[in-house]
Image (cartoon, rainbow, N blue to C red; front, side):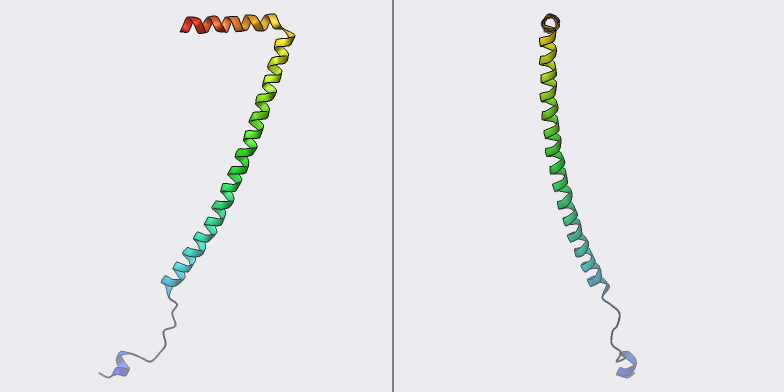
Length: 91
């Protein structure tokens, strides 16, 4: 056998699939990192917003409670006394 029959002189034209897959994986990972960063910042923003709303709701509830106590002080005192009695009985 001659060398011509064993190894033809044609260039290899098929792409390197492992390199293409590796590059695609790196690009995919970089895209995911950016998306993850954006999601984390959105979660932080939503958490801060929820904290603001919750603290505002707490203040509003306390103002409402104080208004009810001022409007009906005897009823409020009776409710507090009843709750204190229940607390004392269960201890």
